Image 1 (cartoon, helix red, strand yellow):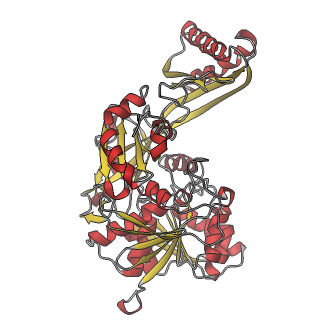
Image 2 (cartoon, each protein chain N blue to C red):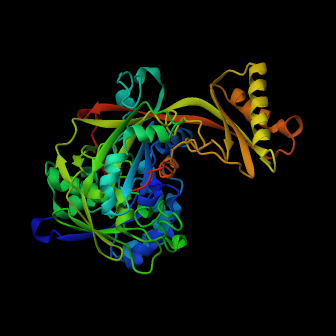
Image 3 (cartoon, each protein chain N blue to C red):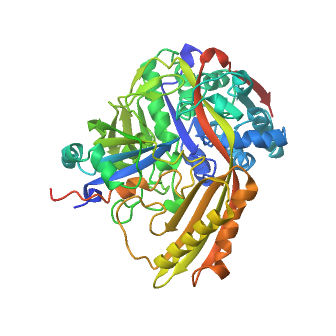
Length: 447
Length: 102
């Protein structure tokens, strides 16, 4: 975009905050939000590893399984209103994601939509044979067998795809705020070393990336923190100015509430050291961040500072880590806690008797100590005994559920509602690699 | 008085690290949070969690005290055996802390 027709203010909406998010709020934002851009964050840390496994089974898969459903709902209204879409729904296969979205567009009779896929986050072959220390715990790459390795790309490839005319963009792994920062860089022409603006844009992206968590989701505590109409929770949008300051809001008539309190909570959500929020494009400092209530559902955000970007990029590495087997059974009425406790003791003795080779095992009484880590205790009307264990092989892990199920006829009185589960564990670890090992590229195609 | 009477909280996770940010409901209560809500008190209250290390950050602009609990999530959401593998419920549990009278 040339200097002359650069915009001074853009409106960016959050269309999803996770893969399972509701679809209608995005449509509502398109129809009423007067948006320029709508960004969908749909890629949790482990999801890309699972998607990589799917791609190995079927080369045309490996992208978000709800992509077609979301695109079917948003493509026509978005294109009719000139709203450009950015999403990490590409997961382990952005190219296939773009093809799938093109298919939806053609089905809907939408011709001439320019789509793009941002590639280059997949560094599995680049790191094969290399050893790097794991950054989130002890050990190194040599200790695990990676099934996926994806570098966290920044916002500049997204901005470039927009510069080149793309109206719908699919990425794989990118820093979540980068989905929102990309349109800002494109619209305002921010430089790669404009650390202050990149940090401000990152703050806005960070506030938006979890969608409804800014506007009253993950917030309500009845009687203490009330939120109206959560069944129709409206997703947020930001009016961003060319200096990176922004006003956060949501459309009139949508559910939820964007308050100073909800915005503060989201500003600090999953921020470890607020002076050093590490992104591919910048190290953002949120210690000076200020949030100001301008009116109902309108919050101004300013004050983030930036420092030069990290030397290396974070890479999320997925690997197989055995199987988790689980079983649960409920006890109610007088003595429920004691019967639940007895149930757990029986299973514990059975596992020892059978010599089951489990790596790790956990016994809970749901209602007492499954989530509770405080000294608080009570005498609940019902408890649910739960046993979960991790083992190298599926057969061993499956025995956990079987032993809990056997409690029906062999355990304490009045046990009901057994459920069992068995799942393969795909775990994630992180390493850092040099930027030179990563070279993003963009592919365009028109519907 | 409990922490919940003067504060609200949000909990997140990064790998094996839990992050709980506690916010004063009213600006007047922030100095008290800053003074009394120490890493040791958090560790004592979440007595069965046993993180490896707790980092504490004070954010006067947001009326907040941020706690980073390293090694608190049994290996993290992808491999933990816990029912609440993300540790999403921890912030609410922290709000149950007894604060004494103002």
